[in-house]
Length: 84
Image 1 (tube, helix red, strand yellow):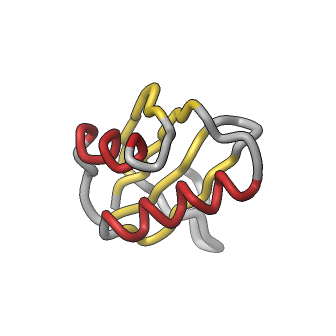
Image 2: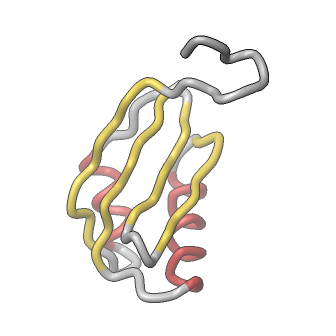
């Protein structure tokens, strides 16, 4: 699993968050996506890394601009994650 954090320019409200979440879900095989217009970020959990050029193109298509993209291994937080 991979956690990808996007920095996005152009999100101004909750509806913008919904638009970004929808376009990510429609174009990529993701487990979860959560966006914040206040932080200007979107956090995505997926099985594999996403292609930056494809993410950028999807966002540009609905009027947003990808500023940066960072991927890292996703570690699920749970009841039995002691000592981590």
